[in-house]
Length: 124
Image 1 (spheres, rainbow, N blue to C red):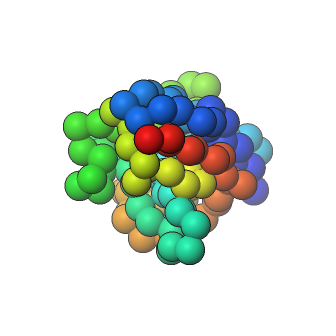
Image 2: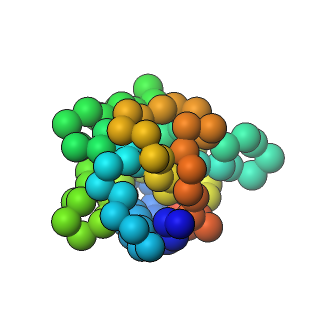
Image 3: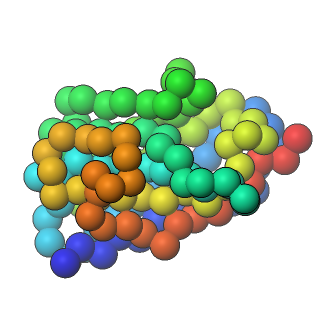
């Protein structure tokens, strides 16, 4: 069993930055892909970014390309999402997800372990 915990959310002004962190425990997840999803009030959970088990492959939704960067440190069992140039449409609860699969997926069903989420609020 893998336990996933997110941190780093908060309130930030439009144009600002936040860095989300994800820590996994219970077993090494170095062999699994990781991803970030988000969910705004009244909306479905949506894919934000993913990274392969090795970190060599990443993928982003179009609206965050060039602003967000996903990374991972398998030695520390952590993953991060650096978010720059934030805008109000980035507001939501951000979830970290871990997969037993080596390759990333953009669908929620591609991930086996989920954190509780961390709130990100961008004020305009």
